[in-house]
Length: 342
Image 1: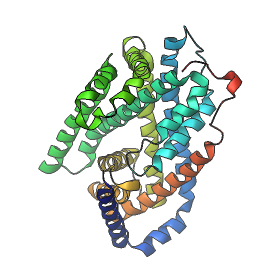
Image 2: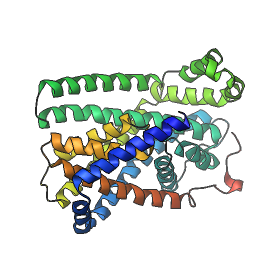
Image 3: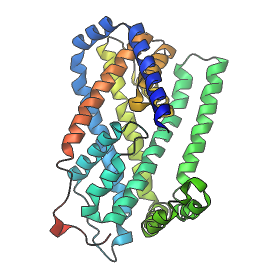
Image 4: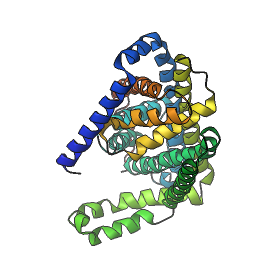
C-alpha cells in the first residue's frame, strides 16, 4: 500500500470518526464519560482474563511442539506469567502497528526463543496466529444464530447473515487446511514463480529449515496433537466470549439493561466490522461506525454506540500502556540458561 493510499485511507477514517463524534454530541459523550468512568476498571480486568485465555492457547501450542525438539534440545516451557507478559506485550505492539497488526509476532518470537529455541518459538507463534484467527472466526460463526434471533428479521438481514455465515465457515475451513503437512513448503516453492516475490527467493530459501520445522509442528498438531489443538482453539473462543462482558458492563453503566446475548451480538459484529476494515490505521472510524450501526440494529440508541467505542478505546490504551511496560520484563532470559539450538 503506497503512502498516498495510506494517507487517503487515514483521512477517510478521520472524517468518519469526526462525523460520528459530532452526530453523537461531544458534550453528551463527555458527560457520560464523567458519570460512568468507574466502568473502566472492570473492563480492563475483563481483558486481563482475555489475555489469560490467549496465553493458555499459546502455551498449549508450545507444549504440542515440545516433542518435536525433545530429541536434540530442551523441552522446557516458558513460565506461565512470563508467557503472559510476552503475550500482552505482543498484542500491545500489534495495537500500535498502524497497518496489518503483525508487529507483535517478531517480538513474541524474540522473547520466547531464549526459553524454547528459535525454531520452536517461531513454530508456536505461527501456529498461534492461525489458531487466534480461527478462534475469532468460529466466535463469529457462533454469533450468527444469536444475531438471527435478536436482530429484527428482514429479507436483507436474512441474506446478510446467511452469506456471512457461509463465508466464515469457508474461512475456517481454509485456516484448518494450514495444519496439513507441507503447506508452507509448497508456498515457499511458489515464491520464485511470483514476479513480485522472485527477487526475495534467496532470502526465503535461507529460511527453509525453519519453515519446514514450522510446517512439521503445525501438521503434528492435527495428526498427533489434536487434543491440544482443540484446547488451544477452545481457549481462544472462550477468550472472545469473556471479552463480550466489556460491552455488557459499558451498557449497564449507561443505564441500558441488556443481557449477555445482546452484548455478545454487539461485540461480535463490531469486531467483524473492525476486522473487515483492517486497512484503516488504528481502526479510526471503523470501531465507532460498527458500534453505531449495531446499537441501532439491536434497538438501542445508536449514539451510545459511539460512547461505547470511546470506553473501549480507553481500555485499549490502558492495556497498550501495560503491554509496552511489560516488554521490559518479558525480554531476554539469562544467556547461560537459554537453549543452544536455533
